Image (cartoon, rainbow, N blue to C red; front, side, top):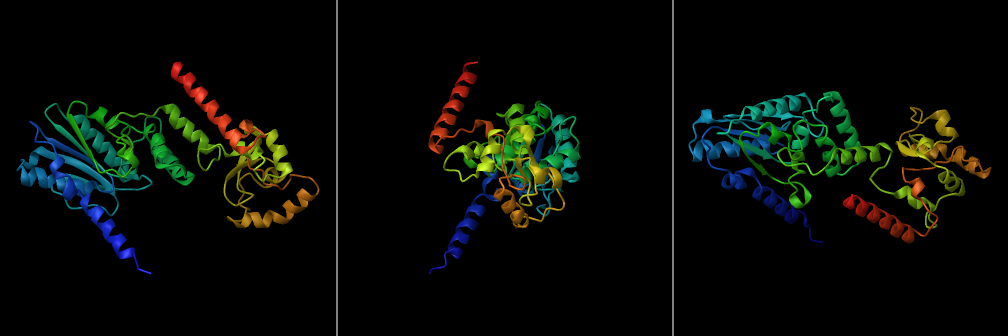
Length: 351
């Protein structure tokens, strides 16, 4: 069999080289303003973009060095030597103190820009973590904790960034607000599907299409134990679901107060209906063996419990959608749920 790896690697390297700031940035940079060029960059490619911008303005256009200033905040290990634009190496994917300081200095520089200045914002993937500026009332430690939880949740990056924006003083267009007196030009090397400008580095200079309600909804969904925003629990009532009679009976009476995040059944946190083992050992227990050993350790107790018609040791998974379940074929339930969603969306659009 022909080894395709060298060819695939060559294709990959060619694509990366074609998108390098040295190749693509110069022809898109705006002309020199009456005042200063203030370059604010963030992301894993921020230092490379800053170097390319310096080469363009200082060498090609012979701009007086004192009229070029800026900060480029990039990931640790991705810094490069620069002449006028200060490089800050910061944490990624979890923000650190260096990113906090870099974001504060970035906002300060933006606020100092005048109507004669050009605010040149250069962003690449990774900028969301590199620029961390907690909103008023949110501590840096809380911001780090939320970021870690979101990364562990398995949420798509778009949903993670929705939450990040509403906990930030720099994301979701807030950098543009700080530098509103200057002309602002943003150039981005995209790493997101469909090149959504509001998603690259959480859109620091782009109007935010999301709302606080969106962010709260995402947090609520994942806080309730979902590994993705979905309606899986509703389908546990369907005939196609291989759910035991004890579990099915418990689901009929399930509500949010009778469920809890627990690690006793598998070794990993998941939302389940409270039963004896959850009450007496958990819900979160240091005694639970690591995943996937916990399930095997509990198996004998589960077998004996089921044999006498007791759910004391039976894992009975239940997310937030149990009350939406119906004893219908899965296809019919899907059609009814879709019709209900469309009805609600139509009502919202008319309200």
